Amino acid sequence: MSAQRTRSADEWADIIAGAYAAKTRPPLTPQLLMEMRAVLLEAVREAEASHVPGSEWCERVNLVLDRSEMSLHSAVGPRLAAIDPEAGTAEMVHRSEAGRPLRAFGGQ
Image 1 (cartoon, rainbow, N blue to C red):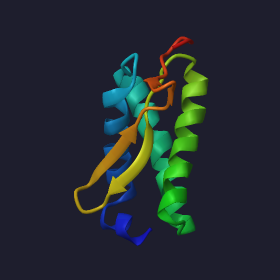
Image 2 (spheres, rainbow, N blue to C red; image 1 turned 30 degrees about the vertical axis):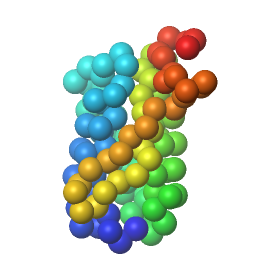
Image 3 (cartoon, rainbow, N blue to C red; image 1 turned 45 degrees about the horizontal axis):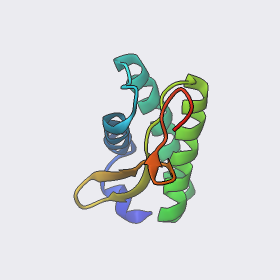
Image 4 (spheres, helix red, strand yellow; image 1 turned 90 degrees about the vertical axis):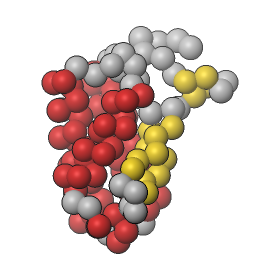
């Protein structure tokens, strides 16, 4: 994923954590945002070290998001769909059932 190497793992962790937090409900507390950023940083570093292709890079980040949400038992946020290395942005999409975003605390 050489295009992502234009920014550091720390920068990508900040970008992805910010994009995730913007669409997560209920909103993340500052402490949870710091914790999420730390686990995202680890996922980004792993993906970079493994030199995985772009699609797998996103999958690795999304697996970390899945595990983090399961441990929180409350927050439901989007998943990483793509990153734009040139713009330094992360495109996030909500998981859905019947075309509606999932909600925290169960149910649609």
